[in-house]
Image (cartoon, rainbow, N blue to C red; front, side):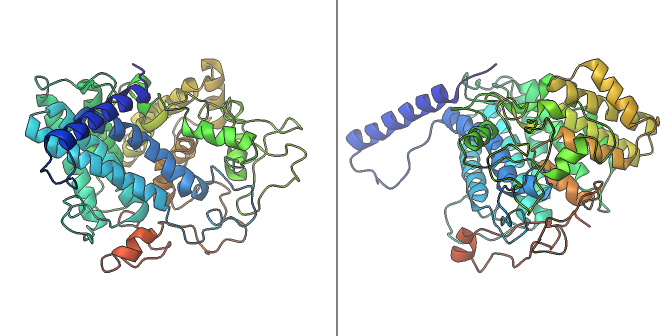
Amino acid sequence: MKQTILSSLISAGVVLLMTACGADYLNVNDNPNVATRPPLDGLLASASYNTAQNQFRVSNGHSAYYVQYLASPNEGNTTDTYLEISNGTAWSELYDAMTDLDDLIRFGQEDGLGRHVAIAKVLMAVNLGLVVDNWGDAPYSDAFSGETLRPTYDSAEELYATIFRLLDEAGAELSAAGDAPAVREGSDFVYNGDLDAWSRAVASLRARYLNHLSETSAYDPTAVLAAVDAGFTGPEQDASVTSFTVRNPWAQVAENNANLLLGGWLSEQFIDALNGTTYGVEDPRLPLLTNRNDDGEFVGTPNGAGRQGDGTKTLESYLVLEGAFSMESSPLNIITFAELKFIEAEAALAAGDQERANEAFATGVRTSMAQIGVDDQSADQYLDQAYPDDDVSRDDIFREKYVALFLSPETWVDARRYDYAYADFELAENAALNTFPVRIQYPNTETDRNAVNVPIVTMTDPLFWDQ
């Protein structure tokens, strides 16, 4: 069910104001610096909405450029050419969301709100996953007590253990939460309080994070497949947000670009992967994602090179308001059934089950196409042309997952696990590094106030799962 964030957040704001006024007028001896207890449904509304928004903040801030979905229209752009960046906006928003979630878990446990607590733990796992997969070691166990201004950093391995613990606890609590007070209508922007849907999401997320370990000795494809079996069974179960204060943030990028605040330009790498240049097969999804130029062609911008024209003629392709991922009401995905099918295909292949890999792969491609409007006949024709052999390979899986997860920050995890081995994938022009980046730097807010704990790393130091 769709709901508007305005109604939820305005309601939460009213409650906060009423609470604050009551404290001011009736409890004059209270410490005004002590925060009043927030309305928990308001915390859930804010955190569930921002968990989806954080997918955009990470992707638009850096990861979409590193995997060459996007390219800057400006030559030598910092992000495009792998100069040191930290994406402090995403870091701050992730920790804001996790702080809200920590409060929601703590207060929800005190009040016996089992549904709220379980959902909060799932959302905490997602936000924490974004932190560790982009920065590595990070504050968590010492981050939310308010007792220290310089929290210690947990290792990335410890944070992954925390992610799995949060998902395990959430799964158990969702199963036991049927008699707990209901989530207020409109305060859960992902599933509107549907516990069964959240349980499917828990299993799907477990499959994702288990699959991240594919390059480590801890990788267990049978465990991944077991999680898949308990996960989504169809695209209608996708974990996503579809209601926004104004519009999907990628639609805002498209509108800004149309108003000459340039952004959302598609990379030559991505366009060539779909227009027949790289693989010799035209992908029917491409016309549904972006625009043709004035010559009727799909043309991307080379990363690092900037736009090719002088602005008097449309020479390149970029995000447009008619695009499947950049319409005003396009879903902002957290994890989807299509992603899960590609996870299944990869794990099945690793487990030696070629038949299951083939079936999951085809379902992933067809689901990706159907969800953006490609008809079944065109999907079948594409699969026949692009994959005439019956058995799919790991290269095939990463190739198609790259397209299906367009604009998702998850693709940067894939790119690193795959060693950036996409066909014809090249460093940006005038790249500052002689290899692709595998992490980003910590933001100045951390290095300025918490230098004693911030790890010293470079953008070429791999995370523990990137071996």
